[in-house]
Image (cartoon, rainbow, N blue to C red; front, side, top):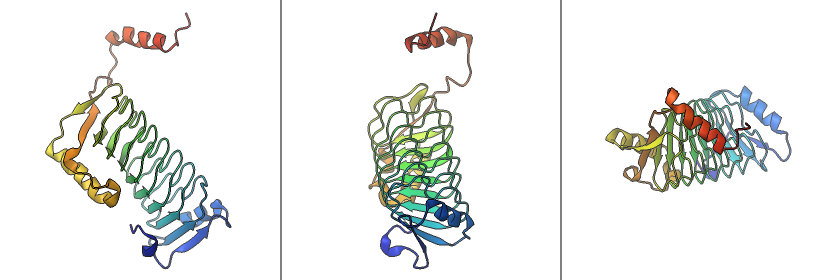
Length: 250
């Protein structure tokens, strides 16, 4: 996808959200044909901008968006020139969603495919319950990122806050910077040549959003697979955890 104001398709339809309702924009995107291009100006933090795209189209949003920007995305390519609030690209299935700035909580949540690129930082629970999406964050991620992540790759070019990968399944996490702490059942794993190749491919795909990161500088984290099956030996530990959390009302 082209990333600059001087490289937008000259035939792009322009929607000014300062003058037209968001519903009209999203309806046009849902009715679009493969190859169509759109430009959105004055989004002013509106929620659910460019949601539900299913065609192979290009959308450039000139400014920041609110909740669930480019949610439920398929096939198309969305570039947001600004920041995004909760749930950016939630449940993305395919295609690409890119943002030049920061994303708050739960970016890429439950994503099943495609590519999400955050040029800046991502907040808490980035990649929560991801199921196959690839996520590249140019900066840092907040606490409990990749919580219950089932499949896909989360590449973090900066640092990761506490409880990274808590209760992770088979997703892979790659971190260039420091990790404050790992969540339950998440451990550091060997960074083999095939993993370096995976990171290199994703960094190449995101271009300048990777901020020149070297694939060889990343460490890999994943599941220790200790939580996949419950055993009776876990009962005492589980009860102790409940009591520690104040959940025992006896």
